[in-house]
Image 1 (tube, rainbow, N blue to C red):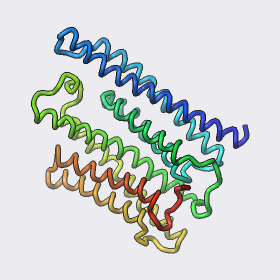
Image 2 (image 1 turned 135 degrees about the vertical axis):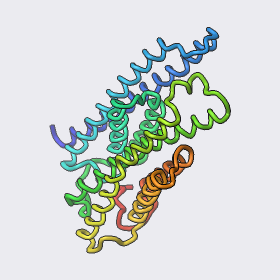
Image 3 (image 1 turned 60 degrees about the vertical axis):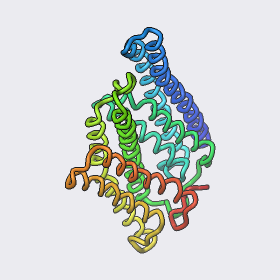
Length: 298
């Protein structure tokens, strides 16, 4: 196959992944809506587990197939360009979506994350939809500034960190939603299928604690790459600055939990604020920011 064939294959696989994630989203939606409807008709005070279990299995299988298609699309994109597919915002987005989906599936082997299937599929659809409609750029060689082995080291560690940060933020968001429900009164029947608040709080914390050293390495390796490329380790470039702000916020989150005993609502909000700084760096700085890190391709 030629390079253009691999590029077309990557594009086709992205569309297949989009369709499958949409089917997964619909299956997760059906799981919730149909079981609650059955509840209302029968007057039963519990979810219809026979319905929810079957539709959840279908949704999980389709989600796995969608992630497999997305992974193959990222690989095909790299083969078409003869490099790691992280040279612009389109490639960063599809690789980031893949990282988030794989993190969801892998961590789901230990923890039951099926209840996160609906918001996770929505997030991935938004990322991929934005990528193909607004961020898409044809497969092409890297710009000279990115032609370095540090691209693999620095950007890969940053994008892996971002995928797990996003998963942690999703868990923190679920915590705040469930906490609000419990403060208003008893959990709804749908909310009863979710883990306890303590479990959500611990899972969000463990995800951040697990990936924070990798994010630290990403920031340090970026400084080393900057010295090799531009003759200085740090120049307070907007992307460097916001990467450091994100590091400070997540470090504060971990420090507050360990030393000040921050848990629950306050910790969840701080986790979301830290995650928002990462997304701000990814979206705003890449698209509208200035400085030497202008490789979005837009």
